[in-house]
Image 1 (cartoon, rainbow, N blue to C red):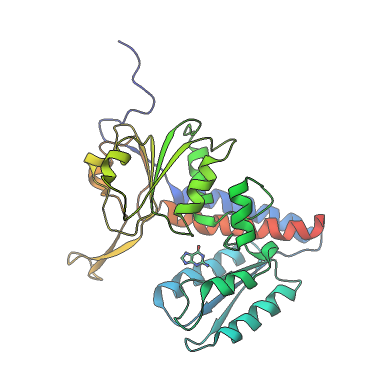
Image 2 (cartoon, rainbow, N blue to C red):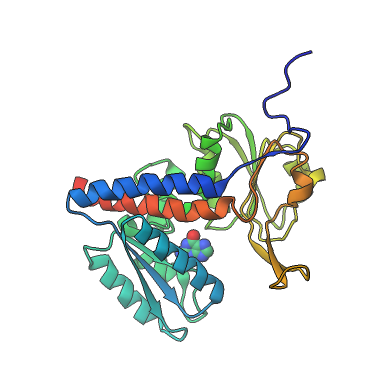
Length: 306
Ligand code: GUN
């Protein structure tokens, strides 16, 4: 009898990708880089801007500030009221653009309705755009120039694949979701030439016909659709690697809060079919912040090399 394929699921189901552990390791690497930069007289600085009082955004922003401080950076959160005007926010961005102590600028999305997010993103200096949302950085990613910033969530997913030895070269990779934050940059990353990429990429979205016919072909399935547990076991090829970017809060009467966090993948069903899978929470989520810190250190290091 031949050896089972290394990607075959065990009888207990898929192996888990522990995003919390990997993010911790990356954050320790970042902290060492920060310490080295501080010895050279540069303290990496991250400015996070939060407009309004959306509770979820408040939690994310707090986590970003805490993580940057833990890594030894100068992490600052600047809060504007929910009724702040677009020109107030643009004036703040201009000030941060000019501030030499600030190497990375992140304006938390979503923004209140009176502010156009694209206008704000275009005002951030591309070399401080650690979110990788500015058109210059989006363009560099698509072209394959590596001197820009890659959005943190797709960068984190790619790092997870590399760290787990997932073969991407020539692999059928299906991405569900076409957002600017995840789906589009994810596809752009995986289609590039090089390590952790070289994949054959399909993007599916809300208008895709017969979604399952695409997902069943996927060696690597990345789901960023924002729909709780939409990917079920019958949609997944046996042995596939499944990455769940979803974070949905659903009602659950059995918990103290009455809610529960679930991904876009039906974890309990899909883990029996997949070879490797990310849990929610504890999968992709922690990687996003780790890659944000990584981008900020890069931005700071460049001011020395410039
Ligand atoms: N809102 C949800 N995810 C993100 C992100 O990665 N960056 C910013 N700026 N806002 C977000």
